[in-house]
Length: 272
Length: 272
Image 1 (tube, chains in turn brown, purple):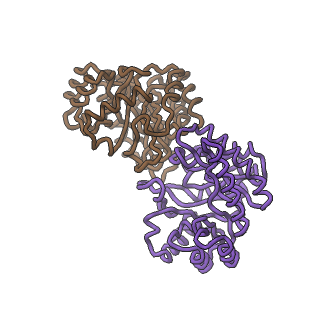
Image 2: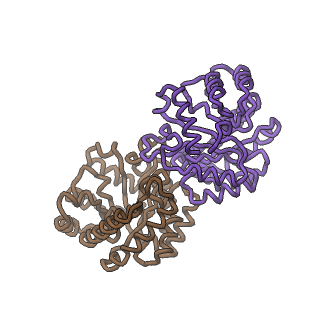
Image 3: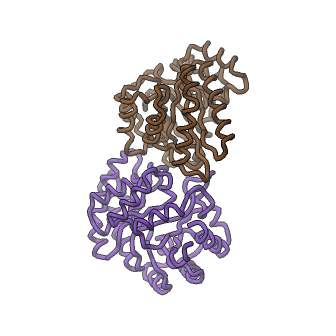
């Protein structure tokens, strides 16, 4: 049974809350960390955001999110590089260990070509990441997001990209929602552990009757994912980081967020 | 540019139509074949359905669908066997070349265990299929259906199941909607061709902003799938069957189905 100190909550999980509200609530709940989405930084600016996050004493596994590297035109790809560098700067400012990368995909471009552009894009920002001591974590996204969000849809393609870029600052964020169905998951988690690229572990659940492709994730225990089993693989692979709770849910965002956080705590202790 | 005689349309594509309306319309449109869903047989009975289909002169690649083998309790699995045998009988009656299998999955059962029960279930009906000269085609379903519809989500797991059962009557139906994102797709199609298990090829498209997990498929050309490329792989692998058009779409079902069939014809000629 995991201790709440081993958990971090993504601000997007409590979307109605501002950054300061998230920090206060997670500290009061005895949760160990926070992963920060850029949308909660934007209204207050990075200086204020850094002050709030650092003042909370919470650990900060990740800033979410960079990526979206592929584009047909070079100026589009250059703009993505600039934005990823800013994202790395923000991560350094709030003391985040890594930036999570949703790598991107473009309708009309083959996934294979898009993956080449992703590797190229990461290569262009990896020195900036290293200089700022911020890791970059490729998050393989579920195949249902392959059209326009991510050309990397399995742990394997994330691994191949890491092997290509070859930097200790590049690794993988493994989110059970995206990869639970993959028959190669156990093997790829073990490989990531052995390669030193298992940077992040995200939990939530897959509802059997998912009503929406984006915002209908389940609280841990509400769906079909054997989270305890996957967590055992991740720990067996040597993962020592916080388990990040990341739930996008229109249904949950409509709840009183304090009561919802109590549900999250119970779900974490019982089902992770 | 493919001839319409190389196409078959799934009755579910024109869901508002009864079986006789589908047959008449496809014959008049110069389409080569029809794949029949069981819901259009149910209201008229198999004898009448067989008369209509056989009288149309259309080729009949498939009856859709059998499968749903896994279950926690033996009686549930036995009932699935009985239903699959009835499905094979119906396929023989209408002269369908194959039964498409949506193999099933059960919340709370690991996908690995479910796949074992699928192989076991298929083994229990394969002789009945052979005796009726009806092929069985495993259709790998998109990973977004892994919770409760299909524990086989890639061509690879379909191949492993075929290798396990070892019968010339068992093969694979490859639907671009489910597998387009798979980095191993080209290789697995070639393997299926070499193994003699490439029984079916289904086309439609994946809309970039998919609004519903079940009924928001795109007409060929409306989405991100490079159908021509996948068709070239399939033909290179030796596939000689009809290209089956299978589109579930609440939006399209609301259209006048005669005008929609004209759109389908154009989309087939231009994008398949």
